[in-house]
Length: 128
Image 1 (cartoon, helix red, strand yellow):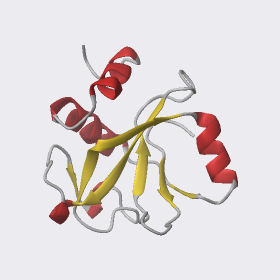
Image 2 (cartoon, helix red, strand yellow; image 1 turned 30 degrees about the horizontal axis):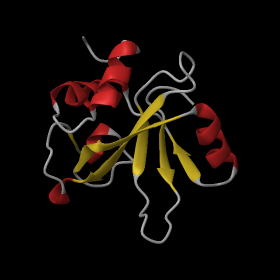
Image 3 (cartoon, one colour; image 1 turned 30 degrees about the vertical axis):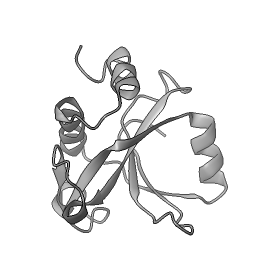
Image 4 (cartoon, one colour; image 1 turned 120 degrees about the vertical axis):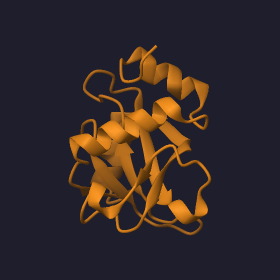
């Protein structure tokens, strides 16, 4: 798994399935992998990054927003275990221009937690 890779989590009671995207570079820092999910734009206030189905055909099915507020720091071991356990459904990586939009939105949003913003800066993904 690498930056820009996309997957859906398996739905569970109280946990709907959403597309998730890896923002960081797992090979460079496998213990600190930042992932963000997409959610229905109609139900989300932060419009820092709005994506349409054309931004990732076959994966994004409706106008969606990146949910920076719920970004997670995880690790490669956890993601690999979830993949092997069938809890993640891998999809094609997001196109480069879509990844650029998501990273630009991370710069603009006020919703990204400071610890995650600091980690992405440390990893060279966000500017200082």
